[in-house]
Image 1 (cartoon, rainbow over the protein chains, first blue to last red):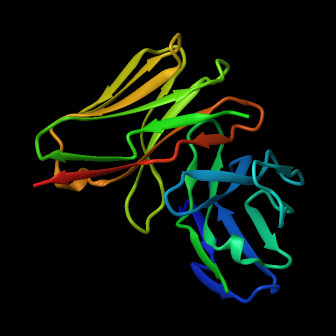
Image 2: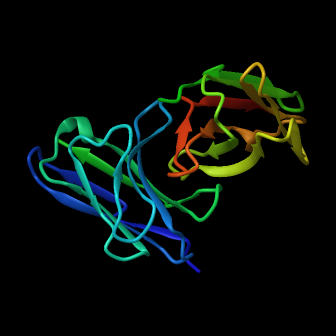
Length: 110
Length: 113
């Protein structure tokens, strides 16, 4: 039982490049989330999903897209990376209230 | 949207002393209040949580109190140890439909040995 995993752990992008972050959970959770964490700040919600095939915008969705084609996976895409997207990205999942977090992806955009 | 204010932003205590971190919120519909501990370079880890129908909850050296009338909740750590040093985040959940958390800005706790 791996819980919540994220791929990759680290990535450096140049401005304008694209990439996809993968989140996977093996707990059969319906709800999945993508947060970003900037220095000295709490986590902010980017997008979320309440079930397979559904996605919705969070607080800071601009510049990101998501997909939930399979219940266990939640993908976060950056179509054209910007330096302002330099951050640590955390995925989380839940079936009730307690959220289980992945280990994070540290993304740097130069 | 929801707003959570967390204080203090930094807290330094001597080993064995108590530490208290407080969060205030504005939305009276919030009904779930977790606290997370985050060590450097690690993921947030839930340490204690409380539902809106409970005023206090304790787990060994940590406790959380909730005052729904005043709209604030607090984390209490007693007999602090150096391994308690970390960043602590409060959070709340309002919208049970999406079950997404709103986080405070964090408190960096330093326990001096």
